[in-house]
Amino acid sequence: MPVSLANSQVIYKALKSCGIGLVSALPETWLVHLIRMAEDDPKMILVRLAKEEEGVGISAGAHFAGTKSAMLMQNHGFLASINGIVSFAQLYRIPLLMLISYRGHFGERDPWQTQGGSATEPLLRALGIPYSFLDDPATVEKRIAAAQTWAVSSLHPAALLLTRDLMWEE
Amino acid sequence: MLRIDCLRSIHDKLDDCLVVTIMGAVAAELQSVGHRPNFFYLQHAMGLASSTGLGLALCLPKQRVVVFDGDGSILMNLGGFTTLARYRPKNLVHVIFDNESLLSVGGFPTATATGSDLVALAKAAGIPHTYGVHTLEGFKAHFTAAMKGDDLACIVAKVEAAGPKGYVTDLSLLENRFQFRRHIEKLTGKAFIAKDT
Image (cartoon, rainbow over all chains, first blue to last red; front, side, top):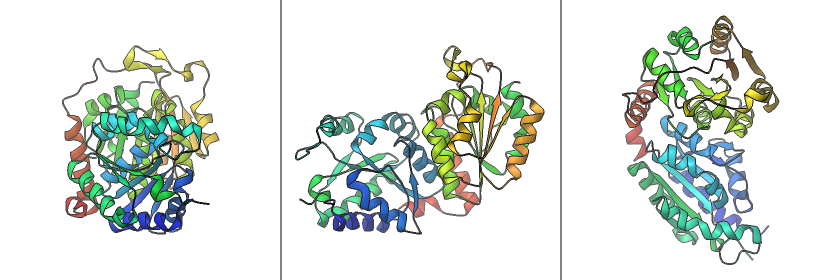
């Protein structure tokens, strides 16, 4: 599978370095290694979801409990979570660290991903959710830590877009 | 059976647990019976109260978590039933007040008014201890047993489509949210802010 195992490891290590204790996830191709790493980690609580919006509630519960969490989702999962993000996380000032695989952008061969690819950044901007890109293994750890720090200090969702450059090896 | 009578009948059993409710009548009625710092009212995001309860229960396995849900809300997150069943937190009691109606927006009937059966849905999702109750005595007995039990339980209480006159209370959403987290911080003896940064 051309999903980058090495770069998935870099991401997972960065999540561990900033103290993430719970990960919610719904499988998608680019996330398979990350989900398996969470599954194999006895110190990580992995919650496999039926739909990504559940992850907003799970992360809110974790935040109330004093556990740092991250959400692993495809950008279509982000689209499916918007009401929860707005009327729970933003309304109640809940920090969310959202790792969103940026499908449907340049280089995408699956036609069904392309519409969501074009909508992702405009929607993040419309919602006032700051985001940065994970596109180079050299900067992954720093960017994840920076987003996590900001989400907690601002009590607000923050997004990291997992790009094709980082996740896919051709 | 009235929902507020159900809440009154078990209010004194909620002191030592963490309570998450849905919006509208459930939140307003529980507050009218008596707010406590261990109660969190999710005043929007329909469907996510049960997910919030799951997150709490998984992160705090030594605490008892109670979710007060409704038919309209759970119907928006039926997948959440399967996630709850999958992780089966032993410390979570899921109460669903089924008034077969979206009461706060005019009382339009939900699908439970036309035959959809939440008890059967919960059981089929894989929640083994699921009970349908129609009387106050039955509700109190099943709730009390579930609180003493050591497994995920779901109680579907059929109640009348009746509620308070208004839904806005004098407890602000953010005040409630910070109070709730501060309560858990004290409960667990963790310094959350120091831990965050």
